[in-house]
Length: 188
Image 1: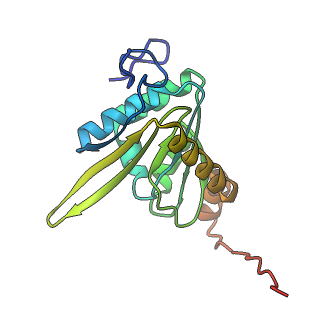
Image 2 (image 1 turned 180 degrees about the vertical axis):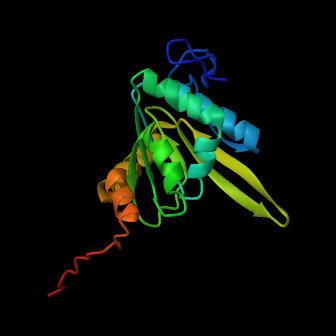
């Protein structure tokens, strides 16, 4: 469980017990909902300056519905960590997006299907794997600098294409249809 913003958080991912990067480079797969949420909370608690996250529109309700994650976001925000999230905001998830926007700087991008987060030293990517009659939550965690940098670059590229959440929410509430403009380059 994450402490209130004025208290020290007990949940860290590095082996030395300090917030920040783990001492050894590692990449591993995490199996199961409980372990994935625990690693996500630790990842959020390890961030010193920023957390950048892309999430599928169907996962927003999971994020705002998991008390441990909400508390970790509040704790990070209280420590001054910059929280930037990108998702597809739709009629179906607008209420969840409004809740998330109270905690993070939220942006909208059509057809966002990624599920990853990156801070200064770590990245975690999640997947919901369908198995015949049930779904299984898995994640990949890494603190290898080159992988972290790659995810940071990808987030920045996607962020440049995203619009502010307030604008998209207003469009949905006012019934405005999205218009798309594409630049077509003449090869001649």
